[in-house]
Length: 468
Image (cartoon, rainbow, N blue to C red; front, side, top):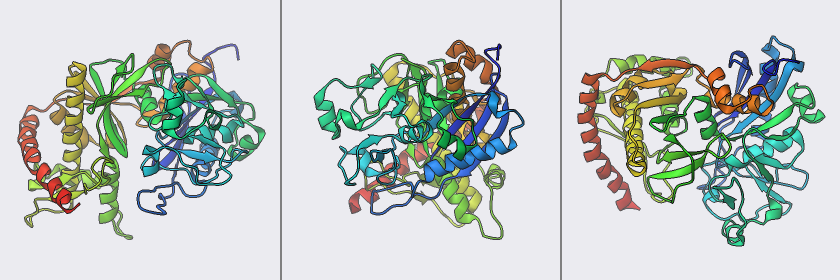
């Protein structure tokens, strides 16, 4: 192909609840898409959360096949694959690259501790992206930007630490780890075996991205330090761009970005944030009458601000440092129904997220000018209006809600030469979707709701702390 921008890229977005695949061109137009749900986590013992069997790989192979089945173009014109998986996962592999034990979810308590060998035949320790990249290419290479948490990584240099104490702290030896590469570099080329399983042509380059939150920020077009990106996923937190690692601080921490040498400053967040929304939807759905989030949103729009006095304590997954915390709904007086509960959860997500972002921005000394919202909740006009009122700034979403998929495509487009620079790729492939302006009346009403949350939530949490 003489035109460097011609052709397509495959974007793999392997998240907490599903694997999504997009096939895009250099303009960011989507030519095929698919989604394959993941199986529920297994929990063999308290504090342990695992992906059952080989579910991550199976879902990726199935999602790629489904996308190719509806792709109208020629698979031979696919230039590369951008691979993005959820961060903070750990995969333990045998010498041949197969799983020695199930992949540990980001929620697993072992991930905050030094590695301890559990399987006799374990040889390598990597992330979920390292494992999937090996399945695709046969190479032991991984994205440097997906190593956060208990790993001997030198964040400033995007490479493994040169300090032996870091390896001792993490319980790992250098021989156990894969080579790491920055975003846009080639992890390897698709093997014949992987091609047969996915339907993709053998030899396509697989391009490194970063962790899923960073890739999401890239795909949403987050470029300005006065913008905050709120990722409405299983974990909900805000991010803003940076150019260097920050010293440790309880209110803001440094994550890798999805561009080489760049970083993201991330606030504290809500664990199982949008998961709680899905949990409630499933709770009120019947086998004969499933309830969608759109139905809940329409009903919640008719509920007054403040959800009739209901307050949600969003501790469905307690933080490691405060394991006694539990989720709660308080304030019932007999007048509320399911739409009040749904609105109370959305309001609590918005308020908790804004408070985390405000604390981070005080540390950074930055003002907030606009909020970019991604993830499943970004498709809800109700949620966007609540966020605009609570954050006090205009809100926008990317045109493609799967921002992580677009970010993975951008990495592949740069890595294969379809775009000459990261800025050029973002300009060409990211577009703005919905917008929500600040409603002054709503903003004033939420100021009172926030005062109520500030008074009630500490008391609710103390109840569980007293029982610990």
